[in-house]
Image 1: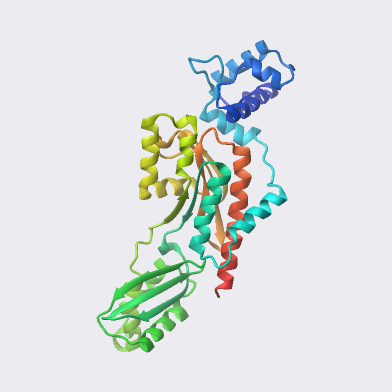
Image 2 (image 1 turned 135 degrees about the vertical axis):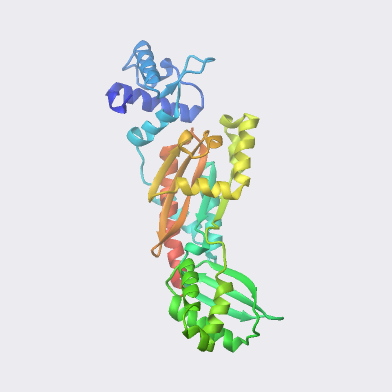
Length: 351
């Protein structure tokens, strides 16, 4: 049935019941709600309203208790239509911003630190997801001569992430030649995604010019290896999985094993997180809305955000569906905005 069938009394009872259940974890009875409402409605009237809410699918009635508890649908209606969120107090927001901006930290260290802050403030699992290297934008590439025909490749993305890899080359090149190749790539390909660069290099290999231009031949040979990566290989920083153990919702051993198995399988976890990060801004995904039935006891509050125009970074919180959404949403939103600003500042400082 449509949510529009709820009258104001039904909405008030549902909102208070969910807030009380989030706070206590115990099924909520009509007497407790009547006290919260200062007896503006009698327990009998509230019981009738709760029965209607159960028929509509917003509440469940555990057989061992006279009280009710929210369903995924009830939480969805609450966060979409009933919940009030406020901006973080200025003092708390400033403290988070200060903590996120440690001196002389690399972008990767900042992301790891952000996942820790998210976990600590939400008492749940905090995560930050960085896009696969192939979807990042090149700012700078360097080649450094090593021993035995090996070359160190240093790739710097527009968002400031630094990737190192060692390649082997058939033609022995001195540092002067390597620098000339790097200069060529930086002049012609800076600002492109790495995947686009790889495609362009393949196109150049088929052009007649590549047969006669010795510099271009070296550039193509180096570039072929330098940009031979798994373009969809995302990086995930996750912290606080042990916090799940503190929630009584996860006392079931089978459920716990399923959760931790998902956390350990990086590819599966990244796929789930990417699905929940689709779109822009804050997104709340609850229970069976998560695209993995084994994680249906979880809820996620996520945010995707740009860094100097690039969009492949996201962060959020995973926890029980009995999450304190009104508190977690502004925390995630503030950390996402602050992290975007911090990485942009690091990027500008590295230019």
